[in-house]
Length: 197
Image 1 (cartoon, helix red, strand yellow):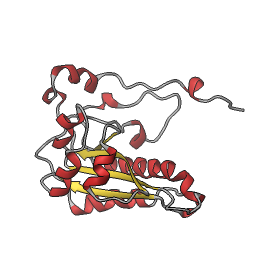
Image 2 (image 1 turned 120 degrees about the vertical axis):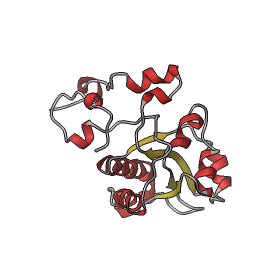
Image 3 (image 1 turned 120 degrees about the horizontal axis):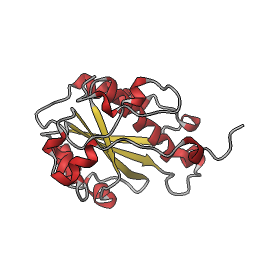
Image 4 (image 1 turned 180 degrees about the vertical axis):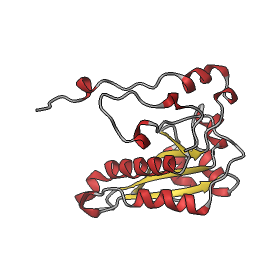
């Protein structure tokens, strides 16, 4: 795996798989690095085979490589600081949730957001296995993305994920450098787990 240092490893209460403990979301990407067709397909296959309630598969994706029109169309609808760092990534992936159309009952699509999240978690893990890193962003212009790609109302953009090769944090503005190298933290299990027998 392509990692700057091993100090990004998560401190865990019990051993977990290395691909999970070492996965993190950088903002500093190598703007000269590229991803291959094989890598893109591998990540999308991982997303495709994520669990799905009743196998409804209520998730769709729009994928653009840096230097393509699709990448530019995705990038222009990122918000805030995301517009500064994400364009240096090799790939942008828009995750879309499928919602019921018209009078269609919700059925298994009730869990489409959960399923899409699982798909993107699979994609991020596969990216890491390929020596890449993924950083999901909620700071996106949802309606503008819908208009940009002429998406019908039942297809709802939820996140854009930047994927690429991690670069030195020194490439970021100073105030963001600290965030890039700060100790990774999560709430302790006893705060997350409300009941455990």
